[in-house]
Length: 285
Image (cartoon, rainbow, N blue to C red; front, side, top):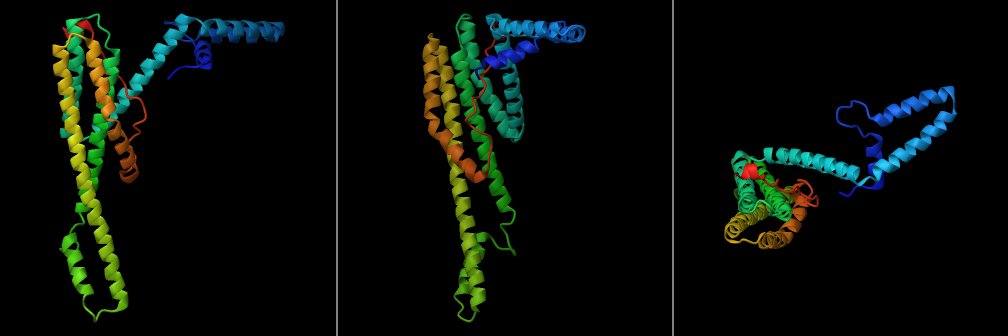
């Protein structure tokens, strides 16, 4: 997120050098406020100095870079906390599956960093971060559908009958000409509800098959990138491959957003995911 001029103004107002517990700007404001009690002219002088201080500091390029860096660091911390929370909500097997893919993505960056420490990998780390984010969303959607099917399976037996068996028995009861009209309407209503439940469960199982296929596709694509990173000496080619894969997942992204309306909101995919941390030379060794 790009910061505005007023963001830099607010940061300048509260700027505090390392080692100071109170921003020096606050001390200055307090001093002029006290002096203004003795002579109101100090208030006017203090306002002028404050405006000059805020303008000079907020427009300083070095100060802006410090503010941008701190904002980026805080945003990454929040993302990491969010990712940790979402990953912790997965089942243990899915957690292991996600961590394994995360390790594979990290190894792609480590491989290139070890071969050429001067290579720039920011674009690749961002692209791999988007792939991991998509993978996590698929896992969460898959778990959400599994939960719905599991919850639906608990009352599957009603009076000792499966939904299919109960539906067939009600259809047989409807063929009895001696039943009352009220009872006939009740049986028909039950049959319609059972039919909708059975249809919904069939659709959910079809969606699970699609999710499993997409998860496998991302895993295979990451493996292909790893192999190409070992063979290729051109980081730009690897970056292009990552971007191409992310583009092919656009339809999957849209599909998940549509499913959120059915299975509930499981986080917004429109948010930009964090990049994968680029390993340092020491970490690579």
